[in-house]
Length: 447
Image 1 (cartoon, rainbow, N blue to C red):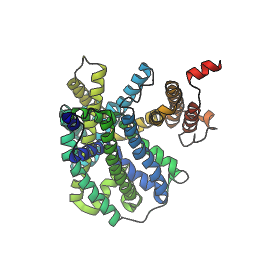
Image 2: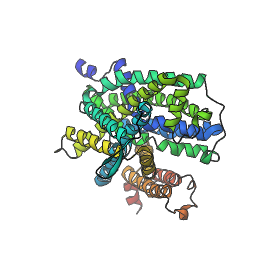
Image 3: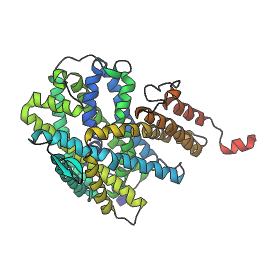
Image 4: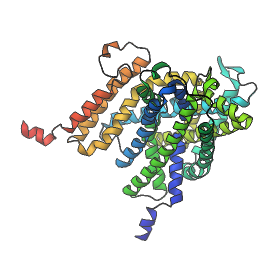
């Protein structure tokens, strides 16, 4: 009995380490480049925009992790097997080799390496393609290291949670204090969509971090790590996962608020900037000189590498379970090579391609998290899950098409259509309706 109790308890140090590791997994490329740019554009409407961003980039990932814990890692159990598998594969591909992981390598190069290279834009021809020479070699090295760390997932908690993340947090706290103590300029006027709808624009900007999708994956990864640590009781797993989620969410909120404020007070430093990475680099170079640039490069490189390791590990474990004849190590190597290849498409192009896809899949992920909390309250939980997610996917497809430039004006009568959230009202109404749908036996008795 004593051994069982021992096995289902973690030390405070291990619990904090787990929280740090969770924070580090989430704090990747998008988390550092999107808030400063959004803050710059939001200007005087920064508070509402920041609130919207925090809803989708902190609140929903926190809810996603807790939903995973509540469902013991089986959030898709109510769906038909083919639908659950298709949804899971879609999420893993989006946050894995298609978008999120290649983006980590690109942002690490743009902020962590480019400022130190004299010939960062030298082009080489390879098989008829024009490739950035420095970016090509950097991404090969970056993903080779990510592969190496991913081949030993059992050591993740120790190497990421207890070593890399405290360094990362220390550096980010230094940056945040500088932003608060010495803002570069007064907050400017809002621009673009942030003038009239800062809240909804902030919510959509939070999609770009992909953290709600990642939470569905990381939750299962953390449960697996807890099992390997000897935490086999489901209640104990839930307890530690929730604690890790709260630590991670607190850290993310701190980083986002400071980066939003940095963007809003950047002033002339942000002139001509095309993304938040440039604002961040310009600010740090202006305030701290060469040492500041090295500091930022270190922060970004660690953040991107830890995220890449977490995502490659999660994707490899998932596809290894799906196709057990192919080993975990083979998948790690495969995904590492694919990510290094996709990364050489370029950061701007990758972000442009990813937005319509995220607009389509995000409503489904948000709806899945919401109905997981309500599963026990639905008289017909299986029917409710399938109906709500089908509606979310249907309207999500049209939101994605709208962003891609397809004419969807026939849906303009829908509330929030112009803001890209036409799915919200139908999904909300479907959830409410499902709470009052009679159970099967009641329906049969009535007939």
